[in-house]
Structures are given as C-alpha cells and as structure tokens.
Length: 258
Image 1: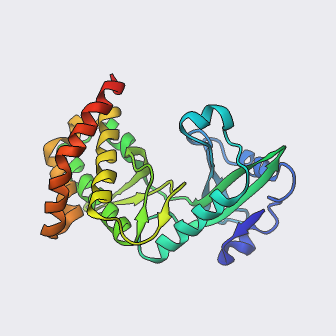
Image 2: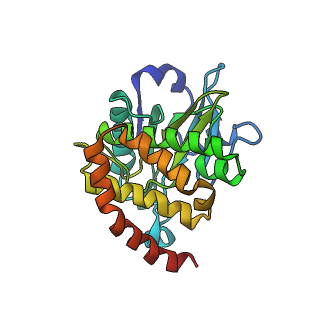
Image 3: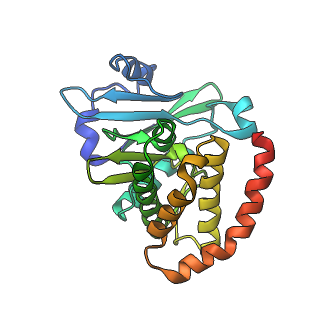
C-alpha cells in the first residue's frame, strides 16, 4: 500500500515502490553517505527533485526485540502520515510529509514514512555534543521551547519527545527548531498543563540520560521555559507546580542511567 500526497504524485510515480524490493532499490540508490542512523536514509527524487528522508518504523521497548520492524497492518504509518500533515497544516514546526508505504512480509508488514529532507539541520544531541558556547546553547534552547509550544498549541501530542527528536537549524542571527518522529503521535485538543509538564519532563530526562544536561544548565533551561511560556504567566505557574513531581521522576530514572 502506497499513500502519496497529491503534490508529490508526479515525482514519486515511476519509482516502482509497489514492486517487490522497490523500497530497497530506492534506498540503495542513495548517494554515498546518504544512509543515516538505523532505519533512516536520505534519498533523492529522480530528475533533480529534492531529497527526502525515509524512515522505517520499528517497535521500541520490549516489543522491539521480539517484533522488530514487523507490524500487523498499515494503520500505524498511515496514522503518522495523517498526524504529521495535520500538524503542519495547523502551523506546527514538523517535517513536510511525502508518502507512507506498507509492504507485506510473511505474516506481517514493514512500514516506512518519507518526509522532505530538512537541509542544514542537526539533532539537538549532536549539537550539544559539539560543546557549543553558552550563547548558542541559550539561543537553541529558546528556539526549542518556542517550537514545542507551537507544536502543543496546534494539538500535537508526542509520545517520546527526547533530545534527538528536535532538529536545529542555525544562522548567524537566528535558530529554529523542528519536532520530528511522530510515530504514535496524536493530533487532538492541545495538551493540558499536566500533559505539557510530563512531555517537558521527559525531554529533560533525555538530557540527563545522554549526559548533556550540564552544558544546558540553569540558563539554558530558563531560556527554554521562557520561550515556551511566552509571557503566559498562568501556564508558567501550572508548570512550576508540576516541577516537584517531575524532579522525583528524574531521580528515579537516574538510577537506571547509572
């Protein structure tokens, strides 16, 4: 099953993605260095078209070791395509979706999603690992806070917002952030303050787990929170009230990180 956004139909037509092995041939045709992290590849569109990022879906947690990349049906990738397109239409800073693909493999399906490649970006973990100066970190933290706020206000619910799920694009005077990987994400009413606090707490714990919380520091966290709240004092107070509970979660999770 191949679902393509209408404006991409002409570019995708002829790639043979519905043929056996069509997805693999397309990915293998990527230029040297096109393959990124596991299950993700940067692939070109023929005839000079833009590059897209193809991501194969894979189960996480305990199911990952058992089911791997096998799914019972195409529902999960179709839902991610729909959620991503809906959030982008609502103004959320998310990737531009291109297509969803489901291929039958034995008793299950393998699923893949393609989005437009975001040029000149780096994920937030790679950014922090390069030890940028404090002023760049604070600017990036503010960009991330603003992006996550727009994502939430558009009705976005991210089940696993961590440091690698934020892309950063820097210029001489500006930094922007993009929220990625909406597998199992939802488009609904904007999250409640409690739900927002839980998401932000998860993001902070990912910094602790990856050992990049220290360079962010109190100033970076304050820049994120100020940009996220954007002068909404009621929201800020609601988030501050949830802070003790999120700190307790961080201490419990830290036992596993050690």
